[in-house]
Length: 382
Image 1 (cartoon, helix red, strand yellow):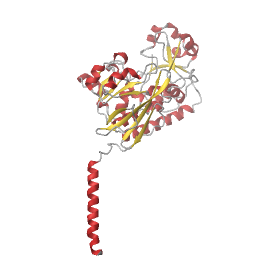
Image 2 (cartoon, helix red, strand yellow):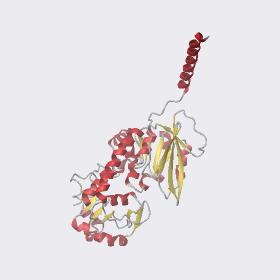
Image 3 (spheres, helix red, strand yellow):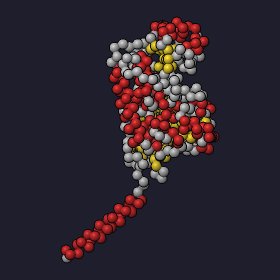
Image 4 (cartoon, one colour):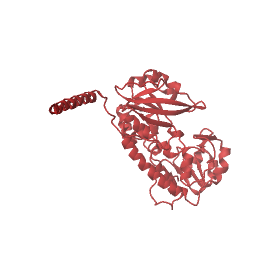
């Protein structure tokens, strides 16, 4: 009786193989990217990889509280899983992205998908050549910002996702028209991060949206290593020159709060910042009289806005001429890389390359600490 066993065994194996082939044919396609992104520095979002989809949570500050917004990143044809009644669904990999701010463009470029941007808030401030060419040909549309957002245009465009800026003073309900029309709206709060690497790590969200985690992870690792090497140099410098940031705008001097990524950047550059111990992750709104005592004796004056020469600073207010940094010539602005519309690449590529910004600051504040080189974003004003 045992001589028939091989036949039965072959039939069993054959049936098993047929069942497996059938199951494989009916199974949904595997993800395009098997890599996963792990968040180490950013505090404003999380990514979880669960079964056949990705779940993103955005922590959205609004009206004094923090709302958790849920997003499910599913492939076309995948059923929406139960248990997420308030989640927005984004079909991935996204092929059409509308972005509102310069850092969002930089995040797309970092992931190698700048060509998937089909809309921007305002074209005037775009530096990326791929997006600028899209604006020129009409492939990329200007959709407006804030209360000027053109909902009709966006609905007609049917983008896979609209990436907006997080505004703690405005609720998310203003985007209800778009969401009711089936267009996912995802807020990006990179500017509220407490560290430069946390701000830059939002590129991993773009990687998850576009199935390019493997590429983004490798590139971010390089950024992280370069930044940490430079920060080690800045943190062990013996001298800590004092620095002030910005210039008054309509009577208010906005300067980084002590828990902001910019304050951390200054610490890592080996600077003494007068408001380093204040609370908050955004900006402090101060009067001239509050800033003046520190400004009169600060060694360096950085980030002075839309001016290109010291005489332009004096034309705003002659009192600036009494500042120590103004008198010594230690005034630096982030306008070395500016396009023909006056848009600075500091706000775009600088958002995902904090190592370049940090390198500039260390070269300015501690020129003997690292080999001399050309500044990337900054230049000294004459």
